Image 1 (tube, one colour):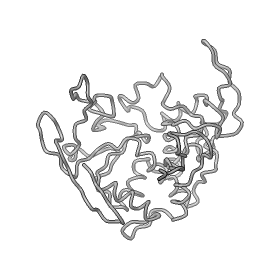
Image 2 (cartoon, one colour; image 1 turned 180 degrees about the vertical axis):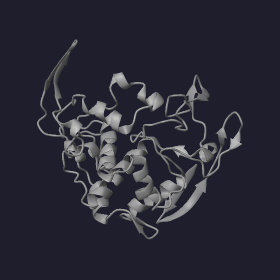
Image 3 (spheres, rainbow, N blue to C red; image 1 turned 45 degrees about the vertical axis):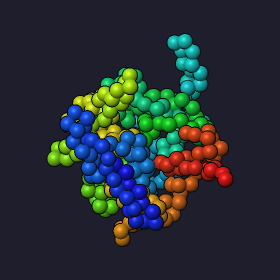
Length: 297
């Protein structure tokens, strides 16, 4: 499914191919896909909504909202079966979480490796465990993509708002923008609109079964507890158009203002300085990768 928009108007919306190779059912333009890590900017938007309301500040230490982060350690050195820890040079802030400079590891610890297969823990439970892991470097000194950091940010949204993370997204982002097919936990009546995922193996397509990102038990999130803030949103091309056009419109879409123009500017500004990030010529804003050096003619 592809959608092309220019100057605030949809120029093309097309669906090509099949939703499933076995049934060869034609795919439709309203197919619902898991958007994986494009969930992360939405988490940042939610945090900025609360920041605009004065309910949090992105410069605050994480431990102000999540006491389980108090007394953190950072890895000084690591050898064969040994690890030396020290206190970090400063506390982890919300900005660190949003820019992937917190020092938190990429994924939950090995002891929780079953989490992404079953999604059987609550967000609060997951973040509690992650908070007790040592940081891998001093906050702000390096860039390292961190699913754990985004999960912590989502938990802060829960604590500050008093709403479950997925309910906050629904009430404050999806519904106001008219994103009627966007969910963390998709309803059963829309499961048939979620195409089958495949990968190539020995040159042939086979069902992608890595839980919960493909065709595993958690595809439809039935019985899941974990809201997977690092990659769990399901959406359509049309719904994402509304979200991205809102950002291009500096915070408003179809008469609804979701964010101030100042917040959009802050989010899409480089916050990581000269740190090496995801790719050459890119820096990191608040939840967004930002191109610093555009293509040259």
